[in-house]
Amino acid sequence: QSGGSGKISFRRLSKRDCKSNCKWNRILSERLECSIINLMETIIKKVENEQLNNEVIIEAGEILKRGGLVAFPTETVYGLGADALNEEAAQKIYAAKGRPSDNPLIVHITNMEDLLKITKNVSKEAFKVAEEYWPGPLTMIFEKNEKVPYGTTGGLNTVAVRMPSHEIARAVIDAGGGYIAAPSANTSGRPSPTAAEHVKDGRIDMIVDGGDVEIGVESTILDMTVTPPMILRPGAVTKEMLEDLIGEVAEDVALIDPDSKKKPKAPGMKYRHYAPKAELLIVEGKMDQVIETINRMAKEQISKGYKVGIIGTEESVASYKEGDVKSIGTREDESTIAVHLYGILREFDQDEVDYIYSESFATGGIGSAIMNRLLKAAGHHVINI
Ligand code: TXA
Ligand code: MG
Image (cartoon, rainbow, N blue to C red):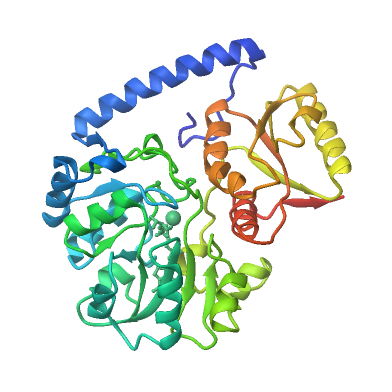
């Protein structure tokens, strides 16, 4: 792993070397992780959906009510939860994630009555959206009332609220008192966790392991305090879906134009998120030309001794000649791409590639969430051929 003192070089490995090396790295890092976890006494418990009313949920609830931190799965990504109405507890999230304190947290609830207990002026449209898309992968922003501490909202008078559909998430939220602040359970700047193994932090009291998530990119954020309502972060609930329901919906210009000097309205969107360790380049254009260009660039870097990762799809992986080629999913169903995106970025970190070349994806439906995250991961480094 690279330390603070600049680049560390690695011996170049053959493919077979790399396979066994990766296996040992994994075993070693798993051991290391276990020992760190033991040292910090993070409790890790597996939960199956069918066994919800077990002591794991009760234990998670007790930790949350005591002001502790519990990581748990949601349908989008794993969240790192704390009691949202307990300022001190919510503050622990910032410390555990290394998160800037001006970046507000999403409050997770399980029912509409609880929404009305922490917000003001919920509009007719918001009720309509909630009726259609809650519980689900959507966050709405409302005016907050005095029950919500500023420590949870990063000093804002508004609060982001989400009602997840994942059964384990819902059980943990209820057991923890009904209002759980939960950002994605990654260290700030790393890809969001889509499996319990990605949640690694010694300062978490408990990790509820509910297996892999279903969606893989974070919820859509819709600001209901402005007219027309505005999407601050694209997700599985798309602009088209929302417009069909409530008419015009705007999009934060900072999302559409990366060169816009305007600050994104969701404070968290301004940080360079999801950055893999390698340099990531997105190649856009006609498919056969994209493949040809990626093959050429990969060959060139490999000949110089670099390790190259390639993000292709089921349809294209067979056409890549060299490098660490991974299929992210199929273009026939873009949700398969969303669910593997962060996992693939993590795998390339583990494989210690120097460069990643990725195909570009369609922007309709969940595609805009995929491209939003991929572009951020690439630092908007795209070539169009
Ligand atoms: O799918 C999700 O939403 C996941 C799961 C765990 O629920 N959570 C998540 O939280 O992605 P986080 O903290 O990683 O992202 C929350 C985003 C940040 O960009 C933050 O700035 C924005 O929501 N946000 C929160 N409250 C806001 C507010 N009052 N106004 C504007 N943006 C807000
Ligand atoms: Mg996040």
